[in-house]
Image (cartoon, rainbow, N blue to C red; front, side, top):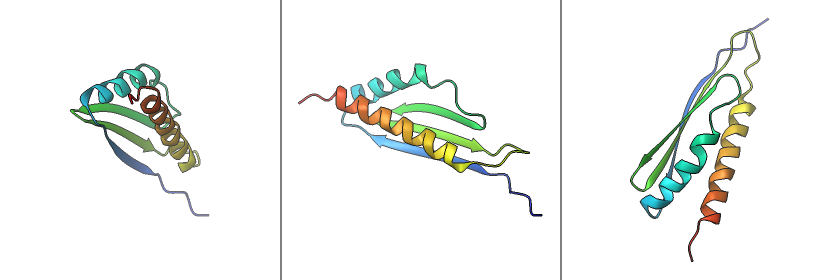
Length: 92
């Protein structure tokens, strides 16, 4: 029987914002809540002037089935939170 390979995925998402204040709002809103993730997932948030950077690392766990859906669902949830933050703080 063939063994599932270990999976390692490094993802970097860059979100362009209109101004530095928007970047800081996203960072300050997400940072306190994003400390505990499913086993095998780590996340880092960074800012760079008008860019918000989201780095997500996924490491398959030895002896367990590698579930890429966990990574996809985690990123999707974070992106939904960012969309809500941007909508709530939007100034017309």
